[in-house]
Amino acid sequence: MVTVAVRRVNLTDKSKESMLDYIDREKFFILPNTAGCYTADEAVRTARLAREVGLSNWIKLEVIGDEKTLYPDTLGLIEATAALVKEGFVVLPYTSDDLIVAKRLIDAGAAAVMPLAAPIGSGLGIQNTASLRIIREMITEVPLIVDAGVGTASDATVAMELGFDVILMNTAIAAADDAEKMAAAMKHAVQAGRLAFEAGRMPKKLYASASSPLEGMIR
Image 1 (tube, rainbow, N blue to C red):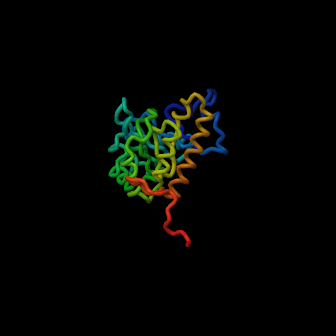
Image 2 (image 1 turned 30 degrees about the vertical axis):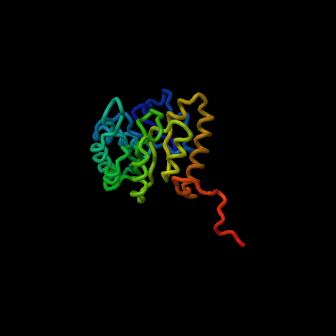
Image 3 (image 1 turned 60 degrees about the horizontal axis):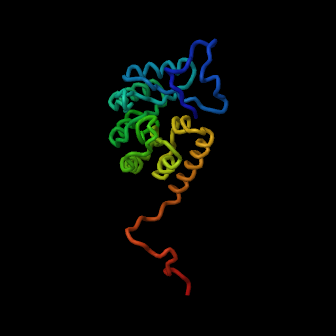
């Protein structure tokens, strides 16, 4: 899956170059997004445009509340989610790491919830592990996607070890010195994190315990 910002892609003038010219749509699913929208109405109009030009009725929904931090406007996000779901869109909203907002988005019909790990493009990694753990434990009815903030492979592993289903990545790979190597590292990190989550980690202990205990040995 490849997500593209509708407002930054040439959709109408076929004589001009477009990002879409470089994506094989037989191999990759295009997920349009409403990046750069600051109101619910603006986001809804952008989603409609994406569907009208044939991109998809799936939409990564962004309603930005602050220009400097790019944190989401959660009230506008819930409003836009409800409106788009009524129009038949499959809505994947980018949101804060807030359990109550996540629940309200699901109530509005969101097909997945996409909380941030850190501000968009910051590369800071997961800043609030507790909040993401709570969201994962309390929400099981829709997929959970970490969106924004992953900076390197270890960040991706932590996200997957928390039990998230998917990670959406851009800057961590695009801004790396060697994008191909970072993409490969992210693939391995996601796979390792998922396996660790499924395996179930050992409990954490304050004191040491023998790594080769005698309990259970056959005498």
